[in-house]
Structures are given as structure tokens and as C-alpha cells.
Image 1 (cartoon, rainbow, N blue to C red):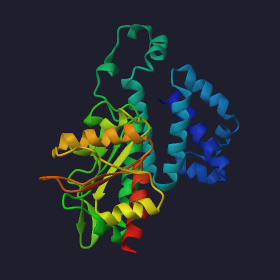
Image 2 (image 1 turned 180 degrees about the vertical axis):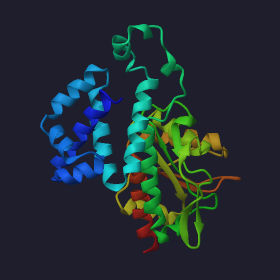
Image 3 (image 1 turned 45 degrees about the vertical axis):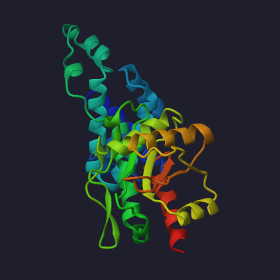
Length: 301
């Protein structure tokens, strides 16, 4: 960490901030180092630092992603940048990516597997998903007009990891999003494994359309459908016959994607014990919330 990883990451972040026009003194303040140290870091190019990181077993595409995240986050909060930095480091350890390098330095560790048996920490991707959801919730809370489209069962937003296999790989809002004092209000901060139904909808759709990463539910009525069509969205109905249960709805939503391909929204007219519902789909939480808010703005006229 101290000898190899941290210096190379500081160098890359310093270069990224400098590329954005930031002064050396400002970079020094943000990174908690001296201006002389910043000058030294900037005297080498990005290739130098990337080769150093690659030599210890770190994939360069992941390094690029981390540098971008830290460079953005450190402008908002040093704590947030630190959080994602350490999450990435712990993930490297738990994946065993540093084992060969570590053993080459200390041959006596040839039988060591301590890091591989340690608890699995949230990855950078986990944090990206949660960050995306937090931003989407912020957008939703600021749109008081959306309360008219909150159904009786409330609203939730689910977002999956790229290689999601189970409901634990899907983040959502525990307790859902309700109308509180005429505003949409999440009942809790988002976390993984928080919504069984929405996770199942999303995972089933992803078996047909793998680039879909997020889903959001909202009220359905004929005006919602009319507005969505006028906005040029790709929409479809579920075709589930007279069957009225959760599994039938989930299957029917996935079948709609199989039948029509690209869809922004799928309408389900409900049934006995099932409220009519609109499911909005997209590539991220912010993507589905933008679509939902476009519908809501036109809906209230």
C-alpha cells in the first residue's frame, strides 16, 4: 500500500486534477501533501505510474476508473474519496490480485491465503451503484410533482451490478419511496438486497436484455400511457392472461422485452390483489428517474 500503490495513485490523481486546470497548491491541499511533493508527482507522466501499478498485478482499466472517481469525489469530500480508495484496495486484496507480487517480495509467504479468506468488501462497482442511486433519490426528492404518480404500494428503484446473479447483487431502497408532506421521500438509504420484487423483475429482464441495469415502478393509468407515448418512449403491455400473481407479472415483463426489444416502459394492468403498475427501465438509476420525471411533468400538465 505505502510503497507501491499509494504513491502511484497519488501521481495519477495529481495528473488528472492538473489536466483539469487545477493549481499545484490546490492539488496539494486536496491530497494532503506538500506542494513540492505534487511537483515531483507531476514531473512523471501517467504511463510511468500505470506501468508501476500493472507490475504489481492491478488491471489498468480498473485503475482508470478509480482515478476518475477519486478525482471527482475529492472535490466534494475528502472522506468520500478516501472511502472509495480503501474499498478498491480491500477488493484487490480479497480477489488475490496482489498475492504474486507480495510473495515475490516475501518468499516466506508462499503458502499465505489470509486475504482470500478475509470478508469480501464492497467493490468500487458496488459503490458506483449506491452513488448512482443516491443521486437518483436526490433528483426524485426535489420533484414534488412526482407524488401524483406514487402508487399505493409506494415506489422503489432497483439497480444491478454488471454481473448480477442474485437479489443480493441488486441495490434498492429499504422501505421504499413514499409520499411524505407532499414530496417523494425514501424511507432509508439504498443498500444491496433491499427489494425482492424489484430485484426479481430486473434480474429476469436481464436474462433477455443484459444492458438493462435499472428499473423503477410508478403508478399506471391511461394518462400515464398516453404521456409516455407522446414523449416518444418505447412502451409495451404485459400479456399474462387472467393469471394475477407476482410471478406471472415478472414473467410477462420479461416476455415483453423478448418480444419488442428496446423498451423504456412496460405497463401492467394489475389484477385481483395486484395494483396496476408502470415499470420504467434504463441503464442506471438516474436514467430511469429522468424518464419517470419527464412523464410526471407532462402528466400534471
